[in-house]
Image (cartoon, rainbow, N blue to C red; front, top):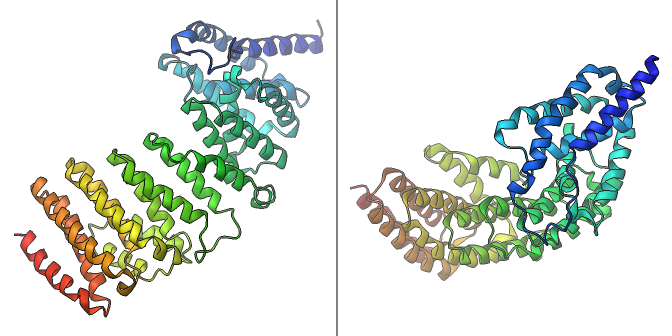
Amino acid sequence: MSCDANDERQLGLICDQVQLCMLPALKNDLDAVQLLPAQFEDFHSLLRQELPRLYDLLQQNEEILSNASNQKLRAQLVLLLCELTASPTIYRLSAEAEYLLQNANQLLRRLSPICQSGEESHIFSYYEQKLHKDSWKRQLGAIHGFVSYLEYYCANDKKMSIKMLTFSLAVALNVRECHQSDYKQLGVRIFSRMLSHSHAADIQQLNVQGVIYENLFRDAYTMDSEDVTISVWNCLCQCLDHFTDLDSFTWNQCDDMLERLIHNVSLSSNAQLSICLLQFITQLGYYFALNRSEVRDALANDFSHSHHMAACRNVCSSLNVSTNYRWAKGILQMLVLESEKLLQGPDVCIQMLNAMQRCYLVHIVPIPLPALNTHLREFLTKFVAVLLECLVVHNKAKPILQLTQQFIDIFIYQLNSSPAGHLKYFATALSGLQQVIVK
């Protein structure tokens, strides 16, 4: 038998083995049946038997894998490996077969430098066929594999083509129509990858950011898990970066987001979720700042070191963002309502105080006291009372005592930096209170 004939035979064996290891299509749409991990046990048994054979074939025929003419084989391998390594999935191999997934990841990394436009064309055609609006719900491996492939495709900061961008948008929108939260979340992952790995000009020309924003914002009332909430709001913030006509002087998407976030914080009974949402409220408070990165870095520091607190206070007090004037009253009211959560466990209290401090520094400290007027007086009266109750409830635990003192220091700094005399007595009272609470 000639070498060419043998190579053809081996190539056929490898291709057949690849197809054998791919997840078969479901018989029914995924949202029409209840899928359980136990239903994939036969598939797992097949993988444990057939994947080692595939890896052996590839090792014995490395020259076939690297042959320039075998683009379709490399494309099929990438499709399989992305399907296998996608996570989290209901069909993923169990922990005892982790070595098979490690081999898959290694092989995927080996393929990366030799896969070019020819392989990408085969892969795109496959996903285009499998992920059609009317068929994707039966293609469990393809939809999860596609999300994994986008991570592979965008490695080394590679940018999506317009063709890939528009296709990804269509897939993500279709997936987000599924009522199951896992698939809605897959859509968010696709959105995020598009926004971070496409050319800004392409995104803005096609108004991709507007389509994504409307799709996600529509569901932003939902109180999901902390991880889901973070991914959705991170993606909405990514959209903001691509709206070219925003400014802080007029109502815009940033205001819509703040309104929704404040509403969600007020409704949330979950303290961890509230802390998460507070961080996004803080982030939006300096979105239009010219020194945004400086503010972000200052807020990230450890305030237990007094010089970090002082530096952050100075940076935040110089902020001049019109958005904050519109939301000062709402922020103060929200902080008072959320202060009840400070009376929960000490760990929650510490995290909440940290989040509240940063929110207050960004949204309230920069605003001149005359503009805050009676809102600040009412806030201080109610909020400081809860801080004192919090110290009693938590037996003056050292971290909570320190955070309380820091908060009072922020109030005193703010009150003393303004000529508004009618609030000066608050500064004097708070200074006296500092002496009392340390005893």
